Length: 450
Image 1 (tube, rainbow, N blue to C red):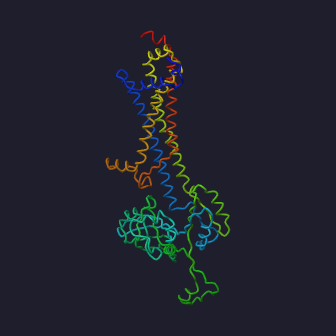
Image 2: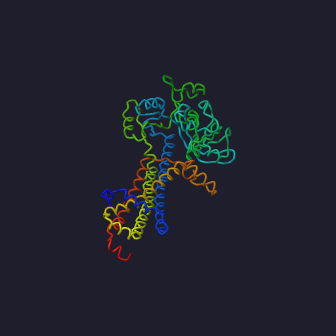
Image 3: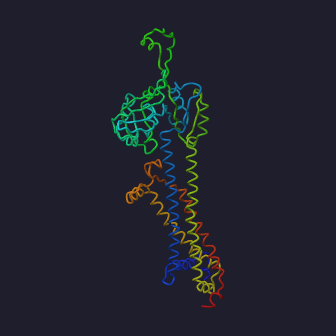
């Protein structure tokens, strides 16, 4: 044996390791074990990639949908009623880092139709200018349109709500608000009917099922978000004044419920909060950010991601233990070969590297197969879900439970690197014990009974 052949990771070591990886008739059982081990690594890596990609997509899609209609900040007025909402919106939009701001009126109501179907809903009033700022909503109309929205007396509802009520475009819905007019006999409900001018699909069950949008002025009148105040310089009318005289003496001041604020960087919450609160001219307001509103939900998602990664990593760990068992069997079977190699001048380090290369190769090939398989499945998650659902006749990941209409998936290169690195590291560590045992073989003992 030449000196060159004994160098670390020499061609000789790679050649011997390659022969041990190739199947021969008498080594068929060991080869099957190695193939199953490789498959275990591939399945573990692919499963990790698919699950983490789906969870990434789920979080991003939810974040996009939630923040597409609800702002990064919700600003609620304090001290005074929110009659100056229009100038306040202009001031907020002038703050550096603010993309846009949207004022709205909101209330809870019961919605029913002529088909005797009813459900609770959130009714939100917005101007057409503000709806245009919300691209997710303005581009989601599947029936009807937002043209002449401010001049209309109609409403917009989600397609799931339309299905639940059994109505279509142009049909009328009845909205019942329990906080109606106050009479000597108590508070009477406010009941009005509105035609459906728009049916939208934003892709999130909550908004498609439980939200009704109407023009701002219509919502302000319906929820009585106004006050009649005396015009400046006008004396209070006489108690015997006519309705025309009373109307001439008073003017109606409308107010909003709150303002949704959208910022350029959703993660820059603390800086933007300080900036908004310290900007001169903006009235005192309570700011609630999206992380506070959804803290429990997104914290649960983060914990679930960590737990799922830990649990699914066990698949790769089990496959790594299979590498140990297959290499131990290989070392046991190749005892005579090891002895011959030692007598020919192979060092303990050379023997150790041969079996380390053999085991690591199993892990590398399995990892590469799992990487390719995982990326293919993750990239076609929704198509596969739809196909499997149609094949077995069961709807997988129903949107009523998972909030989204489709199964999202987002491949994160950093996470893919971590998964591949973890698989390769475990595969390498799994080879150390069997390779060390092979290196400690005594040639004399191994050849005694040959």
